[in-house]
Image (cartoon, rainbow, N blue to C red; front, side, top):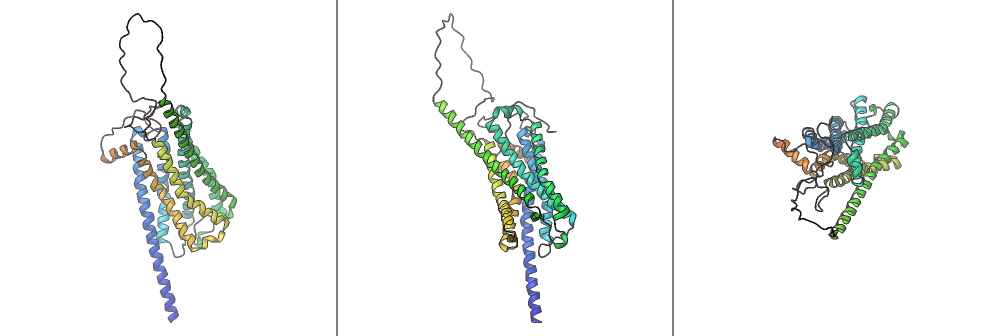
Length: 375
C-alpha cells in the first residue's frame, strides 16, 4: 500500500512538472509567433501600399516577409498546439495527415527562409562588384524570376526527401512521434545539410567581398581626392570677353556618394548574415552530432539543446522585420506614415535599387526603370 502511494505521488509530480513545462514552452513560442506575425504583417502591408518601395531589390524582402507569414500560419500553430496539448513522453496523437503537413511545411519554410537570405546576399554582391550590369539587367522581372528559381531549387532539394520519408520510412504516429526518419536516408540528409551549410558560407563570402570592395573603393576615392587634377590654360587668343557663366542649380542626381554616407544595403547584408549564422549554427551542430552519434538524442542534455535550437529558429521570423526596419530609413518613414494614417509623402520617383538609401546626405542615384505595381 505504501509503495502504491509513493508511485502515485511520483507520477502526479511528474505530470505536474510536465504540464508546467508545456505551459512555459507554449507561452514562449506563442509570444514569439504573435510578435513575428505583427512585424511581418505590418511590413507586408507597408510594401503593398507604398509605391516608392516597389523596387526590384525590395521584391526579395517582400517575398521573405511572405515566407515568414507562411511559416506562421502553417507550421507555428501546430508547434504551439503540440507543445500545449501533448501527452507525457512527447506523444503525437493528431493523425498522419497533420503530421505530414507539419514535416513538409517545416522543411519548405526552413529552406525558403534560408534561400531568401542567400538571395539577398548574392544580389547585394552583384550590385557592389558589378554595378553597371546590375543597373542594366536587374529589373522587377529579373527579381521575380530569381525568387521563382530559388523556390524551385528548394523544392527540388526537399520534396523528394519528404515524399520518400512519408511513403516508406517515417514511423507511424501510433508510436507517438512525428518526426522524419533521417537515419533511413542518410545520404539524402547529408546532401540537404551540405546545401544548407553552403548557403550560409556563400553569405559570408558575399559579405566579405562587399566589405572588401567598399574599403578598396573608399581608399581609391580618398587617394585621388588628395591630388586634384590640374587644368592648364590654353594659348588660344580671344577676341572678346566671354559672358560670365552662371552655375547650374544643384540637383539630387549626383553620381558619387559622399564619404560620410551610410550604405544601408551593406548594413542589411551584415545584419542578415549574422542573424542566419546565429540561428542556424545550433541546427547544423545538432545534425552533425546526430549523424555521428545516433544514441545522443536519448540524452537529457541533448533534449534541452534541441529545445534551444527550435527556440533560435523560431526567433528568426521575429528578427527579420526588426532588422529590415532598423536598416532602412525609407521603410521606417513608410511604416510611420502607415501607422499614423497620414498621406504618404513618399513619391514614385525612382530612388535607387537598394532599400534605404540615405536621403539626408544625398546618397540617392536615380536608376532607370519603372515603378508602380509588382504584378
